[in-house]
Image 1 (cartoon, rainbow, N blue to C red):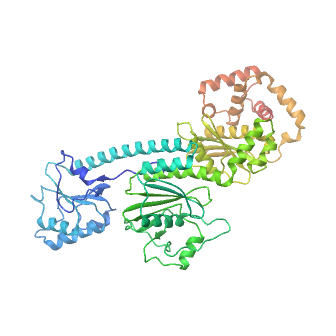
Image 2 (image 1 turned 180 degrees about the vertical axis):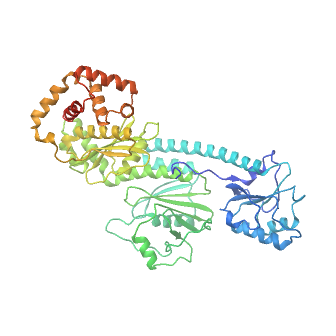
Length: 543
């Protein structure tokens, strides 16, 4: 599955391919429209290429399929099938089968509005396809650079004293259009960019209603005409004026033929809404994103054109605005501020915990699967995925406090370690549990590991004070070296694996061997003996 954070490969304008002097291509029929774009090249000598086309192709043919004496009827049927399949253009190779492009084919392409390109004898179809891929690669590189710069500017805007207006201004500038934030009741809270006409403003507001989830305890009756009952999606692109929703199997209509108040409308409104939807009105591309805080905020954009990276840029802005509006709407930011002040003034964690909204919490340690260290925006996105805004970036690890009642599930692109639920006085121990769980998860290549509750064990039969005293005495020779203690604990937990211990500790395997040998010497113990290992493991669990 493609990474949703990476924009799709941009299509290439047909004019850009025609401008390649090395190919010598020439348009001889069809509209000279600069908006015609090509998504890929496909060679076929089938008389009916329709079943083999996906749409957007430059179909290349040398006319092998053309029977002797073919007239206007044959070429009309042939071109009409290409148009019906969504083909972008037809490239006809001159020689060795045909000395010239058949006149009847030229007329058929002109009649059906299909661009017809003459491919000279010196240019192979492979050269045309290679040139197309080269142009796509160049366009993709430029688009990735554009998306990266936009992400950086949006993150900077989110750190300004007025983050919401700043993010909207940056988004409008990057998309070259209008960006609007709608509140839970549909009110426009803020906007940036050129103000569109009344028709576009009204359509964008209606589109926001399509993705806005019903507020708790309140289910709205759908406004007339803004929802259409689910209908199957075909393989061809939708016509303008119809909204496409991101949830499978739903098309949202905005035209006059959309039924109002039908049972299907009510069902669609009262159940799950799509997270985003799009429409085209008066030549303007409209997109609405439901913000992830669940409070009913919606981000809407209106742009004169659609570029490949626009969705990625708008998604980044939606994540940032979800964090900003969620904090302001719920008042959790004020609670965190109050808790921080009280901690700085000497209050105990147990005293400030109620300000955060819960009595028992879990500590989650997360580390991104890539090599890059997490930045504040990436960390905030992890917190949003886990349902918590209590996030801390500690080097290469992100720490998140999650209320006990909220399930902690796998997050794509992250390796997570989860502690047991703990009261505030036990948060330091929970932090250690999460760190150990993360180290073990990375060593075993598991996406998530929990420090779960366990049944009663033999060690529980020993009085805790006596067990602690025995553990301290047994580990006294190495207790002054935290590196040795951590290495021994990790090595035992991974059944003596040098390589996995090295991965968990981010050290070389020879370093692990040296530390374990040092532990064996200081403890005067045979670490190959399972009884010794067991006793040391029990002791390490007490410290």
